[in-house]
Image 1 (cartoon, one colour):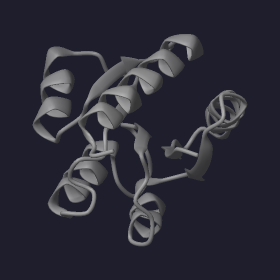
Image 2 (cartoon, rainbow, N blue to C red):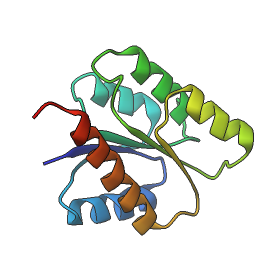
Image 3 (spheres, one colour):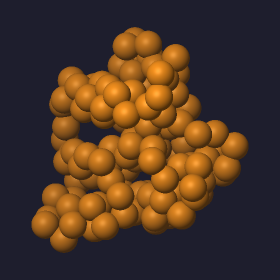
Image 4 (spheres, one colour):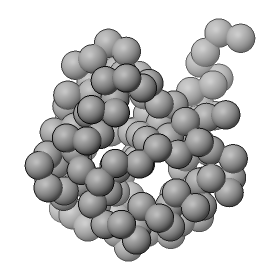
Length: 128
């Protein structure tokens, strides 16, 4: 079962996404802020990370930057969720190694499709 770390400070978004991802068969671990996400990542290598940009303690950009420094986590696909959709924000996402950037409000179906796509690409690149 594929494990996804879902990070957002908005509890209703966490709950909706966790429900939809679990319904598709993913094992979902959640965190309400960036600092907690890094704590979890110290002991977990998820198959994919979904993270909000604007959160207390640490931004999603900061978490991604720290993740990419860790050799164990360097190749984990990251989906960034954000209300920020300026070119600078998208460029910053690329700079920290984000695989996909979805702006809020977003379609849960579009998110699930992106998750499936990123995990399928990752599986194609792994040794069997």
